[in-house]
Length: 153
Ligand code: DQA
Image (cartoon, rainbow, N blue to C red; front, side, top):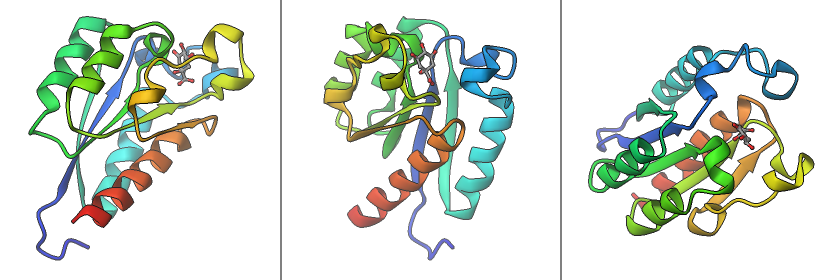
């Protein structure tokens, strides 16, 4: 319910190859497409009166630009940087450069997988990480975002 307080604005960023969800390694990432996940997020956001904008890009520079432009436009970022999580200093630095808080999300439990996925360069610059719950990771992140933003209001 929106009690007249202005709605909080949350930006969701999906990184590389997440546009292939549904077809891509479904035993790891599930059978939902990115469109299915985004639709679920929009339904949930409406229920909790949060305004969502959703961006997917396979390009590191576009993700860096998107993060920079979030300053002053959004109250919180939810980001699945996908493979960039493990090696992009540029995305880490962009998140550190802005004052908009962020939550890191992964569908799979990156700590249970290959060793190169255990390291997240963005983990030290976000509020926290939610991983391993499939598409529910995003809903849990949205719930966390709404709770955090409500506490601030
Ligand atoms: C992922 C995990 C990453 O290691 C991988 O490169 C992805 C997806 C996930 O959501 O589980 O592309 O971020």
